[in-house]
Image (cartoon, rainbow, N blue to C red; front, top):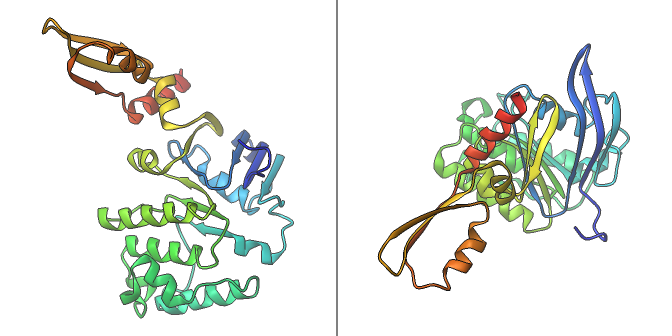
Length: 287
């Protein structure tokens, strides 16, 4: 990573406990401008606690946290226009209409920055203009998530923290959300999102972090984690004698390059899945 860039998130040695229960146990991570990083792991391993610690909601026991170069617990109010958040649950005015909710958020953002979308533009961007007069309590779970994303991105934040943002979305809405996430990172913003959806993580993430027992136990791209935690890809082809051949390789790209120098036909590669790698990681961790 270029030394000229500063990380959007830098966490070093972060520890947090509820009484004697250790929730975060020495977490280290960096997130860079333009990256989408997906945080994976079973329920209860500290993913949401990590998000809350990044926001300065929870006091850290040890370690350091920086968002966009600032300590979140000391950041001025105008700083938070640069950070967008989609939580799993909200406590807000369910009787408000969607446009009232977004107008209220917009008013808060306008005290910190001049660069804020209109409510109509925000809803048009996520495809929910027709829901502007609907009460928040009458939205489906998926529609509420999309409204939350619209709210989180009204001020074009440099950093987005998304806690399971696609939960409850139908396939069409999820696809739209994915497009919006990728569109946002095209503007050099950074995104840290938690998810249980491995297909979603594989589609969106530049890098994956896997948590267990309050620690990050794996950090890498999808291909890197596949190589490190799988038995390899199965490569099949027919040789010049018409014989069907099978080979398992940890580095299928290199093997296929060598193989293509020969006269072969019916080449196929059966790659091991991210799910298989993830399960292997968790299996190793439980030993």
